[in-house]
Length: 331
Image 1: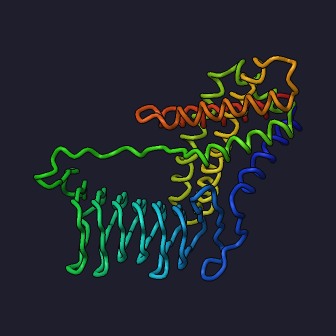
Image 2 (image 1 turned 90 degrees about the vertical axis):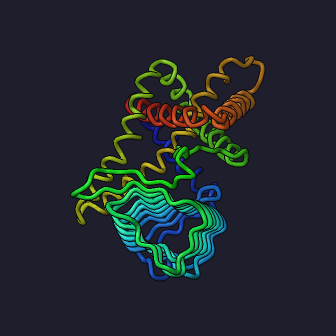
Image 3 (image 1 turned 180 degrees about the horizontal axis):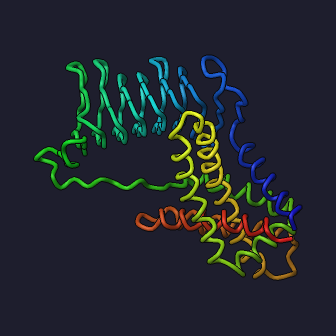
């Protein structure tokens, strides 16, 4: 069954990347070592030194050591950045989330700003239409020309004073919002389509995925949980040293790709359950397509639930990754 597993793995990867516009093998311009790809309406960039100086119609996720968003950069939706040093002068149409040692904001952010790191600064041209929430080693540096329309909430710590939370008097009942998980119906269709291609292209491997999932669901979930939790920890540990940064980038990339693959595999595994319950008189292709369709709809509805959507998404991705690993171990 190793050949079947490899077929599923390769076809899933091919389908995921084929569903996006394309992999850009080597980013052009000032970021020759960067890798770029797109999934849905989100663009992903990873590399050592990255500069973004163009318009992006959608969201943007960037990981690197030194990251710069120039004045020419215009991002339509949310931006998520993880790096050592970050500077942005871009026009950002959504929220800006930063994980960095040092960060400078000197552009227009139409949503909220969230920062976790050591030092945060706002330049004279910084404009934030929403709130600013940050955890840092000291108070944020705010130029007199910067404009922040919303509230500033902070948790600041240093060597001499214990951590403290500061917030305005008129917002003392504010709650920090947990990150949400959304799966639009076009996105669900894409994931379901990829899962259907995989199930039809490698029927033996898809059947085995269903069997392994039904036989050892707890073990599959545990293996997936170890991956989802362990990969980011390994990336952080690797990033402590300069020599470990390339490994950290690879771990982050694998973690992101693993989440996409896990959701596809979860659809395949769940689809096999419904495929087996359909009447034998239907053709195999029709049964597989019907099972995948039902599984896709159920996962889409579950992930869209207001209170439980995040748990459904997490369970599906975790289970899918674990089931794929278990299939690889079966001879």
